[in-house]
Length: 268
Image (spheres, rainbow, N blue to C red):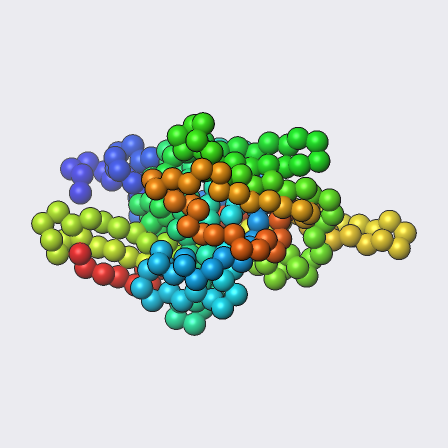
């Protein structure tokens, strides 16, 4: 494409914003690593109204399970940043996974790479995690000062390993919709991309205090409250309604993300 040598996976090709060493690499062979992450999260039941924001071919699971995560990545291979995202549990071609309708970051490489490679619908926003007394709180604002979402958790006890395994498997398929808008018509594409999140919770040796045995993973659960503080048509995260919170937690972990495959495509 360039008269000179091509470098990286992203434009400008001679000064790639991400994947600078990926000249001959396919995106599915590239892994983004995250070390010493922390997040506050909640799994909850939503309702069938979220079907309106799912792409064709996806089915909402009977459980109507959804989740919100607010995370801090102090080190990643695309730089440090905060992130908030919403997940909806879906079935696609018989496989369970999560569709990603909303995601926010504060890092340019994270936004560009997510949108261009896998279609993660990332926008810039202000996010944070704050600890006050016995509460850990995550929040999302866009623009700064307009509070869209607040998630607070009172992390009192480690969550048993069996519950962690059922809610947070180490390898999770995620789906998002990548768009290349048409210029003249017929020259655009919409693609559903499957990618994988590998989440490894930090773990301690067996923890026992006399007859009391605790879970080994560094994930603490407790009372959780998730509110959509001021709905916005520009950032409608409130569309994924909260009917019942099943689990709220604060956790420490490492993570990796890897693109996998285009699983559905439309010409535009």
